[in-house]
Length: 231
Length: 231
DNA sequence: GGCCAAGTGTGAATTGGTTCACAAAAACAG
DNA sequence: CTGTTTTTGTGAACCAATTCACACTTGGCC
Image (tube, rainbow over all chains, first blue to last red; front, side):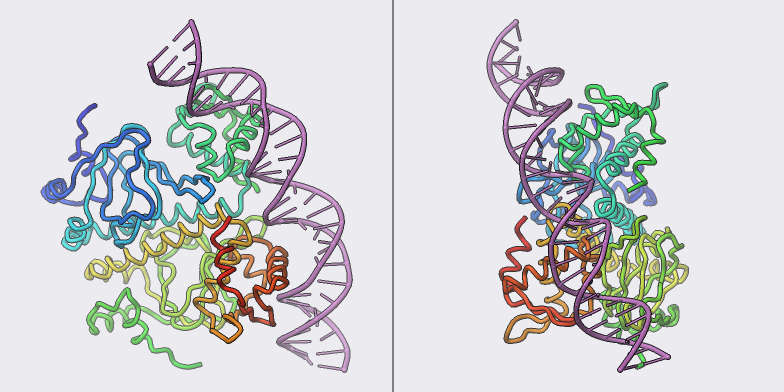
């Protein structure tokens, strides 16, 4: 397990990039490092939210679970981004669960330390405003897709999204080396595992994509894109 | 049409309540007042968003419309609250439409004026963070309801919500003097007008509520509450 | 009053997607 | 290598909600 360079991560992160190196040093002293194993719960909905985290390594799944046990995944937070800001900022409970995906290293900042820091560094507050605006826009999109788009459109969009962030271009098409099970794909677009399966094979039958173990290759991204933007 | 006291409204609003009176005076000079008629469009999705507004009088409907013409209403912003903060803060396009409901008076602040003000007044930035957190929580709720709750649950919840904000207690129950058409109710909970109609009459038949012209009286709010929290 | 537009009421047909129940295939642990 | 667990594949039955089609009511307006 390699040592993670917190200094570099902090400098790179938009939130803190404007600060003087000395100020970031200060922040480093305030925060702590925590490690989580794959599948380990980081925090749970309803917990008192007195810290925020920055992903140094691994990914964090942010999700909610219904009474009947259905899960809806809001986001998979990649390294270099933060999570838990909302509860930190308003001091209320966490609105969602956070679970480690893979071995994770997080840099954590406690509310009691960070709020005073924020008051001394207004530029950071302004940056945070931008972060929250981004979240709000993402949420709007999510709502819009849920309300207006049917399963094929939501799935197509997800695939294109994954392709853009985790995909690699190959002669045949864009290969997504995703280790997402069909169940997890379903949880990302609010649909059942079976429906994901059926839609994927339907598209495979049409030659739109190829399915291997743990990877999907988009053969006709343009066609999928059309599907993502229709009903 | 009565004169609206901008000074009082600004002082009352959480966002600016901490400021010195003199600073609020300054803000008053920066902003302008605009009036809109019932149904008039205030801004449209995709517009450049270079201002935010504060509702002084009337209500503002925030909604998006799908390709097929379906409308989804995110919020009805009441007097004393603000709208359009997101686009103002990040300088990007508006994510939704805003339409006046009833005769509206808005206090508007331009981005070019407000951002410098924000930099001089960090407390306001911190307050804005709280506002955005509130929005994010509301959005989370919205997503959760869309993804997990069926029509009766969503409708029950909406009615209880309306009862809490616009209702008056009567001997028979809680009376909601809403001037919402069934279509508009549907747009608030992402469902068709017909389905709203059928569900309301089903509940009326069960004695859960009473329907008059432009008003609904909840006879058994407790039962509705149970419905709102089940599947 | 009488007309037109907006809103409401209602049933039948259709549909998109879920649920269920299982079989087959991989992945994993010992 | 072998049994166990997780994931995938698939069809049939089911269901909630939409769509469609149309009648009825109400309100506002000239």
